[in-house]
Each structure stands twice: as C-alpha cells, then as structure tokens.
Amino acid sequence: MAHIAPEIFNGLILGAFYAVVAIGLSLIMNLTGTINMAHGSFMTLAGYLAFALVGAGTNYWYALAIAPLMAVAVGILMERTMIRPLYRRDPVYSLLLTFGISLIAEEAFRLIWGPNGVPFSPPKGLGGGISLGFTVFPVYRLFIAGALVVIILALVIFLQHTRYGLRLRAAVQDREMISALGTNTQLLYMVNFGLGILIAGIAGVLAAGMLGLNPQSGNSLLMPAFVTVIVGGMGSLFGAIVGGLLIGLAISLTTLYIPAASEIAMYVIMAVVLLVRPRGLFGEEGIFG
Image 1 (spheres, rainbow, N blue to C red):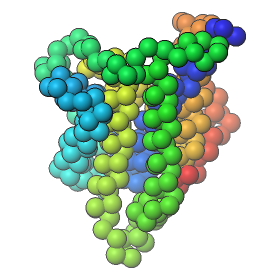
Image 2 (image 1 turned 30 degrees about the vertical axis):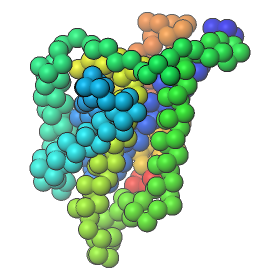
Image 3 (image 1 turned 60 degrees about the horizontal axis):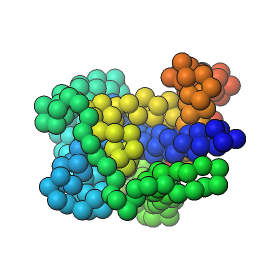
C-alpha cells in the first residue's frame, strides 16, 4: 500500500490534467468540427508567458491569471484569420493547418527560449510536502488537484446554468436552428474557441511547475488528451473526466509495475473501449454532458 497509494494519487492528478485538456479539445471539436492539433502549443505558450512574466518580476498568481488570457488573445487571432474560413470544409483541412501551426510554434519556442527546458518553480508558499498518512505528498500537486477540480466545476456550471453556456450546447445540437433564432454563430464560435484555449492555458501554467517547461511540453499531453476524448466519448463532459482519470491511473500503475508498457497502456484501454462501445463510454453525438 505504501507504494500503490502515492501512484494512485499521482495517477488521479495526471488524469485530471488529461481530462481538462480533453474538455478544451472537445469544446472546440464538437461545435466547429475543428481538430485542433495546436492545442498543446497553446498550453506551452501559456507556460512560457507565465515564465517570462515571473522572470520580469510579476507575482506568480498574476502570471497564472494573465498568461492564459494572453494565450487566448493569440488563439482568437488565429481562429479569426486562419481557422474560420475552414469551418464549412472537411475537418482534415483544419487538422493539417493546426498541425502546421503546432510545428511552427514549437520552432518559435526554441528560437525564443532555447531548445532545452527552463526552470519554472512554483511559489515558495506551495513548496514542501504534507503528510497524507500513507505518504508525504508535494503541496504544489495538491494545489494543482484542487485547481483542476475548480476548473471542471466552473465549466460545468457555465455550460449547464448560464445563458451563453446553454447557447453553446444548443449550437452543438443544431447550428442552423440557433442561427435562425438570431444568435450570432460566428461570435459563438470565437467564444467557444477562446474558452477551449483558456482551459488549455491554465492547465499549461499549472503543468509547467510540475512536469517542466520545454518546447514540447504541451504536445506531450496532447495525444493522451485525444485518447481521453475517444475513451470518454465525443461530446460528453462527464466522459472526458472519467476517461482522463482512467487513463491517468492506468499510466501511473503501469509505470509502477511494468514501466516498459506505460506508454501503450492508454492505447490498450482505447482499443478495448472502442470494441465494446464505438462511441466511447459516455459518448452521445453532438451533446455536452
């Protein structure tokens, strides 16, 4: 138990990261049909912007709030100028475009901040560890766990209990109808895209203090997030949460017992789920929740 309990806790936190990133991906894919391969790059961008802000003397908490918003501004600019013309075309076009953007972004990060990782430590108040009975766990990881839970709950409240959230859900089900009722769908697309990037940006800053910060750090979380979307089910917010936690636990426990198989554990889970439920565990086409 002394070995398993910490790995389970680590797996839950890692899975929460996957879930948060997957939710951002799912928001964008379900409404616009855009497969955003640059999603991980926005995580990295927010992490580097937070690093630059802290290096310039900004308080960590301000950096945590400002850096994701700066990433949102870049994301909305990209959405308005490059992705918007592709909304009515085959999704493969947006996939190729955003994949190219991710490659350009990665090289830009290398040119600006160097090819190696940069030190980005959490504030002193979040340093050290705290005893959980079965192990001493880093305070920063506990803070991340709490922050990710808050993000998920805030998103649930927004989608389920606000007028704009209801419009987003309605647009996923029937874009033509909500447009005919007078809703500005282009503004809706922009807000939806920005919301997905905001979630990715916050996760990127939090991840930078735990997993490190390098030009590829965001992209390393992207593939597990895509697998999370598939396992949980397209269009299901609850499915993304369950899928992320399941994959995080699988990777963490596999690393403990069979380290060589840790990288394929999530693909095995995905294959098994798709054999039983082709739409994922909780997938319902075109529905959030």
